[in-house]
Length: 240
Image (cartoon, rainbow, N blue to C red; front, side, top):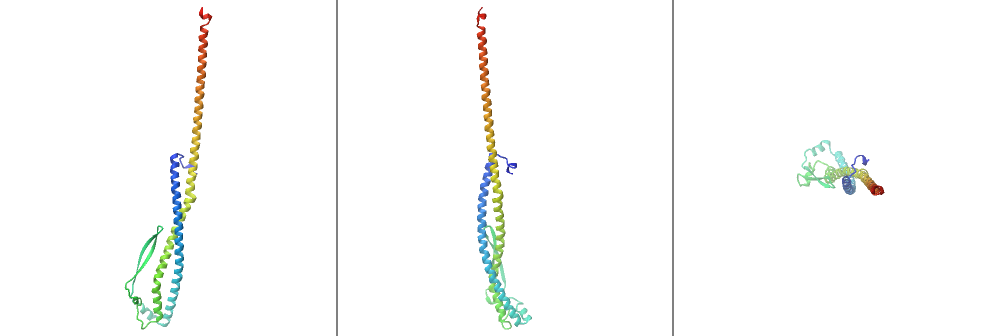
């Protein structure tokens, strides 16, 4: 209850009204942030869904080509083919700010620019299906990285949405109603104190008026008594 913890003064009333104004502004900003995060999250989720279907289809095709190549080649030949790779991939991770959420961005750099370096073997003793599998995975690498970027961004944004939602609910259902209740309590107490003060002032005024009236009556009585005594002293007995 607000009355058990708040000192009902005008200064406290002013301070609480300022807090309420700030809380309402913060509530509006947090709601706007939550709505914008939800919009961007849904866009990322749709993009993630499309990328996942594409990546999974590409991986299935690459696995099928690998299976066909492994069936037409010996296990030793497959191991030797990938024994010494000629290409090297470096992954750089940066971030960008999306509504105060730092989402990752992945950038790939290869050691050489020669597209043939993805094949670490000669073509004389390997199957063309193996070439198709390697090329398919190489073409699929940017989409795989983009998929990882989207999924991590969705994860971070969903956590931020949940945190923002809790803050919005706390302001809307707890803090703002408590401040409004506190303002009503302080206003009621101040009005009650003002009425009490007016009642006391009226009582004091009545007492002062009554005291003044009694003083006048007493003064009149004393005046009449003095006048009567003076009249009695000036009578016949007094003249003789």
